[in-house]
Amino acid sequence: MRVGIPTEIKTDEYRVAITPAGVRELVDRGHEVLIQHGAGVGSAIPDGEYAEQGASVVPDAAAVFAGSDMIVKVKEPQPVEVAMLEPRHTLFTYLHLAPDAELTQGLRDSGATCIAYETVTDRNGRLPLLAPMSEVAGKIATQAGAFMLEKPLGGRGLLLGGVPGVAAGKVMVIGGGVVGLTAAEIAIGMGAETYIYDRSIDRLRELDFLLNNRCSTVFSTTLSIERMLPEVDLVIGAVLVHGAKAPHVITRAQLGLMKHNAVLVDVSIDQGGCFETSRPTTHTDPTYEVDGVTHYCVANMPGAVPITSTFALTNATMPYVIKLAEQGVHAALQSDPGFLAGLNVAAGEVTYAPVAADQGLTAIDPLEALAKVPAAA
Image 1 (cartoon, rainbow, N blue to C red):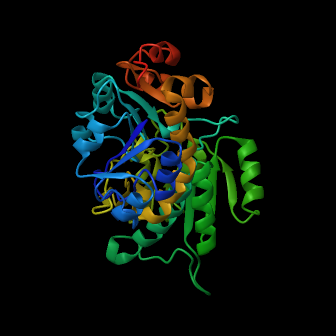
Image 2 (cartoon, rainbow, N blue to C red):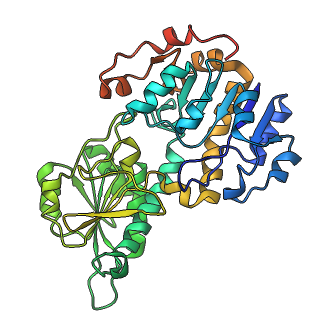
Image 3 (tube, one colour):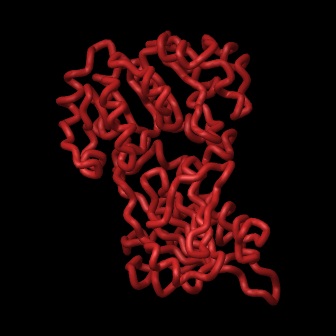
């Protein structure tokens, strides 16, 4: 199979979808890898390292798309990339389609077979391709929130960890998944007084154990959140509904309960955001203010640390990339229900029910859609 790796063009995105080690694994198995010139530069991987392992370095994205059967990316395709997709292509990347009807329609119109990292599951129902970036995003969320609390950046002027004789700041983490756990770990490490909210008692018990009882675990309700909002300096939104739009856990009206220049960090922004007042931002212009509360809603937080993120992501994705290359999309997905769960769009149809529900569409059975995909894909 011919595997293509274009340069990421989303604003402030520096990751790349393959490392030289991944190229070697594919080439050793007889596959061809086409990588766009400069694709790895943001992650400190020069073209020469890819070429040394057998990749063909091509001048532009058009050459990648024209010469490849499978396109492997990091972020969702931008409009110029969607326009280059054809029915013969398999696209494997983060898609986050639920809040983006325009992208969904573009992928349907392309006829390509589109598999989303974020909805692939393992045997235990976990999200193995989302987890590594969730770990990175959780750690960045607390770091960024602490930074934005500094007065020159519009924050309250508070040191999150405090100092002897001065109380530490308070951090509320809403959502106890991978993002929430890692965000809380960093907050605790900084010395902040930390509270983590979740709707699963079993998960709260796990968090108590994993965090060694160093923070307060709280059952998440509207009232429990409201009562804590006046006390906290930093709120990290880490809510995830697999493949669907994130629910709003803080409304605009509730911002009035918060301290002036407190900070909200919305890690759920890729899935539409879990605060009513959230909208996507970039690393270049990461924050805005609503009702005296600073919002940090960068849609690709791990892109800020591409050396870490690229290797963490590709460690997880490469076994799946190899499986697609070795078996083809039909056999690879049919042999693994968890991998099949990653199929979001095929043969012009939406195949992932939560995406369809959020956009008022009807989802087609993934296997039914897959049967319509040309065998060469």
